Amino acid sequence: MTITEKLLARAAGRDMVRPGDFVNCRVDLVLANDITAPIAIEKLAEMGATRVFDPERVALVADHYTPTKDIKAAQQVKKIRDFAKAQGIKHYYEACEGGIEHIILPEKGLVLPGDVVVGADSHTCTYGALGAFATGVGSTDAAAAMATGECWFRVPETMKFVYTGVLGRWMTGKDLILHTIGLVGVDGARYRAMEFCGPVISSLGMSDRFTMCNMAIEAGGKNGIIEPDEKTVEWIRPRARREYTLLHSDPDAEYAQVHEIDCTELEPVVAFPHLPENTRPLSEVGDVPIDQVVIGACTNGWLEDLRRAAEVLRGRRVAPYVRCIVLPGSYEIFLQATREGLIEVFLEAGCVVGPSTCGPCLGGHMGILAEGERAVATTNRNFIGRMGHTKSEVYLASPYVAAASAVAGRIASPNEL
Image: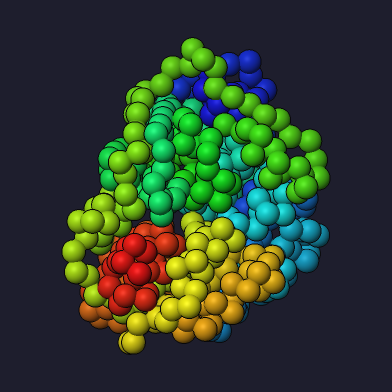
């Protein structure tokens, strides 16, 4: 079996599963946020459920419209805060205790290797970087999981992506996943597991692995997954508060497709509007003036991402008439970035440094685009109207490219600086 099949078999109490099988699985964690949790809470009431199956296994994170941008957002957050209090849910996060859900849950050790996790947010697949099966579900399925501690799945086929060669300067996990999405398309992995492996993946740090699994959904993937190794264990060890299981694909596991990608000649990648598959290597971008840069989000709000942006911005200034917004992914990351002097670098460069929020990524607040404006963002989606006006444009890139673009006032390579 593949690692994805093993994870589902284990959670279903079965010796073996095959793609296409329907299984009912025990879940280790159920997640919802300030947009999806209120709906799930309503569905719980409709079901007649009075208690969640385990208040230690439910996480509620207010991160999309927080700090609350208006009365409606405040009402949404109050609803889930009151629910968390009534249910005795320990893992409720908001304000200085919180941050972006897909960063703080691994950071706090709530997701571990071997887990099966469902979240009422499509980027729940982020946790596959730890060797867990994690996937997004609708609020109704999240409610059912909160009530029963179980969720059903159709076992997905697995696509294997083998990355070989050596990464060049300025290359990151963001560039690898954008290249991959450009290769297979936004529906090329529809309802399939995307297993990332090879020597290049082994060389990546955890932040890059999280980034790659985060964007599996942008290729239509059911989940992204990376086999746990020593780096995984080293990252998990100080965070884990319970036992975990390291699973790996069998040598004779069957794959729907295998893609081998030589990374040696790859260069940083930019996804043009209005799909993540609309990718171009940086050398072929041309002259694209910009109005805004966003560095952060569940895709690239990790400490390593902030270090990369600061490396480019140190001693430089954001171009006139360009807004550069930096949003650390969690309170802990914000605090460490402050200790390392990164926040000072951003402020001296002319950036706006804001709280740990999804904010502009979903067109929520704190960085909405006007008609005709262009943004370079380290976020994960660039659909029409994603960050504001339907006639605005979002270009996806790594923190290195985003920071260089902020200085240049157009999409640019750090090499130009």
